[in-house]
Image 1 (cartoon, rainbow, N blue to C red):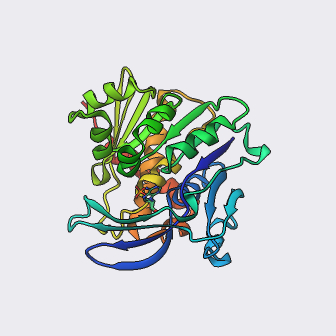
Image 2: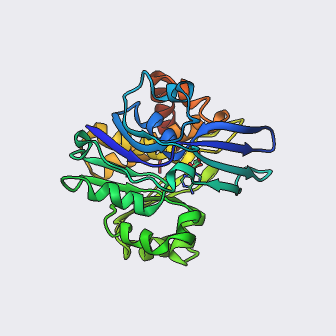
Image 3: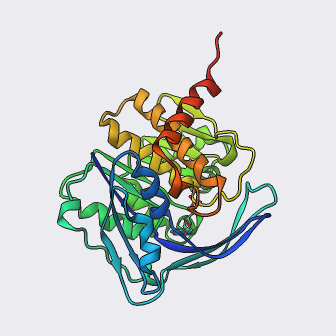
Length: 302
Ligand code: AMP
């Protein structure tokens, strides 16, 4: 089964307490695609500028990623700069330059319009809606990620697209901001009224929580001795999660819980090194081994 993703392909400037980089390849759709391609074929919709070289595009090569929907436009590629706090749990956005995304009007290749699993990665909700409306049938699952930038600037467009979303995947701060509720379970109830029937709350080093109408599931973050750069962890989580669902082809509680584990596994690889360094090199056997390790991490008898 094939997955469709729309989202940012970007250059990032990242400051952590240990290291700084002025310009590394990033973007929500980039992390998502690389992570998800270990599980299923991914078709990518986005735009890059004329500063995006063949060397940058090599990240998509040799993987199950179809980039026919990645347009090239005159101008600069999306640019984001962020700084992490000393404990890496908080992040401040320093700069967001939409650049070629500001005027982007995606035109879906015809082969993309019948895909069953759609991930609307973090980008302008108007673009997310444009992709959804170009599908020739309603995908089996529509999942969406967003962030404070869009919650604050485009709340009406975000509410519009949320009406069509099954699974919302955001972090705890965004959950509180979007719902105006501090308690995450109450926040989930407020969010269900906006459209999604499932909420996945990404909580960094504390793992992730999935809330449906009637149940809650929790997965830890993989314990690591060294975290170098949390950028892209959420998108890699989404890639493992959606990738597993597309591969499984079934949608039930057990598969959703497994998808949470694969999400957490992919996020854990990303944070181990800077930018895409580790995720780009991860081997299928390492993914399997880490997923198996999760069963040991969480097993208990009563
Ligand atoms: P994450 O750490 O998973 O939340 O995502 C980090 C990625 O999101 C970075 O590589 C950025 O390029 C990208 N990003 C940051 N801000 C935005 C935004 N406003 N819209 C789209 N993508 C963004």
